[in-house]
Image (cartoon, rainbow, N blue to C red):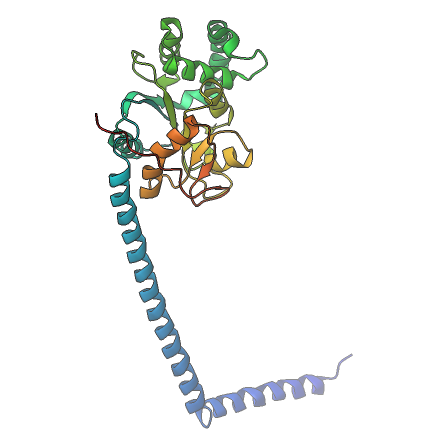
Length: 307
């Protein structure tokens, strides 16, 4: 059993230490501590000001770079896609203004947007799976040898969409109407009257889109079906910032699809028409600055000569 005197001595030692700390802090060490803290605060304030100034400079440089790329693009883009026809597919989770910006750049290149398709949540959500599974065999029968019997339902649907957008056959064009009709329309699109030579898929930042009802799994089967119909002339623009990004997954799986990252940026807009042309010419790359990018920008073609 520990003696009471042991506790008393320990308590006295603690009190003495506290007293000495108070005396020294209020006396001889007070000035040194104060000076040290003041110096540290001053140094931190100086560093903060320098970092703020550096950040402002970087923002100015980025804005200037964006302006420069925009001006350069306005000089190089016109006439590069004269009389070409493009269908634009907007996946769930993509803002309308993002698509409008890309459409404007494609038009600057001289191309026509012959159809803009909005893919609805029903294409990917679990609630509509049984409907999709029942629709797929009907569409597959109309596609004939354009689709393999072993592919998934999702790939059958996207193959039908791409075939309808790019074909001059009325029966295949009607596939777009089939996908936009019924009790569970999978897309919003106008009837096809002019087949496209190019397909631009605008993908969301993430492969998962949270909705009020459920989470959408935006699988890669969607892109596989489109690229199967148009292996030359298809490009996907989106974000590849992290591993959950849809574009990142396309690149990491090494799908033979041309991609452009930096969705919404000036560089992305300027690169998109050139990426479509490069893909049609057989050059398949991942353009941009984000994950798994293989080249900064696509090859820039010479503008068409005026006759």
